[in-house]
Amino acid sequence: MKSLDELRKLREKAQESIRLREQTDGTKIVVGMGTCGIAAGAREVMLAIVEELEKKNITDVVVTQTGCAGLCEKEPLVEVIRPGEPKITYGYMTPEKARAMITSHIVNGQVIGEYVIAREDTVS
Image (cartoon, rainbow, N blue to C red; front, side, top):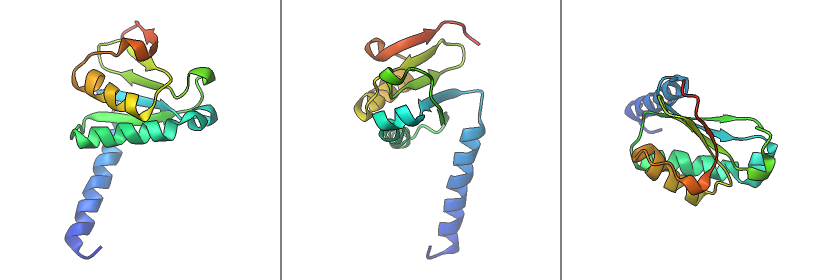
């Protein structure tokens, strides 16, 4: 930190990050970060998701994590929850697949069927 202005910008960025994590009415991406997910590469997948959202200047999507979902053999898992749509669970994710998922599903609204391992058709 070299100036008060830099500190203010850092504070604003942190406050925006907290606000997005608390948001519940928009699109939400949930990454499985149980021990099995982490061992399978979930940290790298989550980092790729966050970086891709930042790169595309998408600020209205909450990225969060959860524990083990019991589908260890399909890890890393990523759920996409969009208002008015079925919850989509992607499996066997990699950073490359995560970036493609952001472009296709989050930006263009197109689910990548070959990555899907579960679809919850009950819309909330």
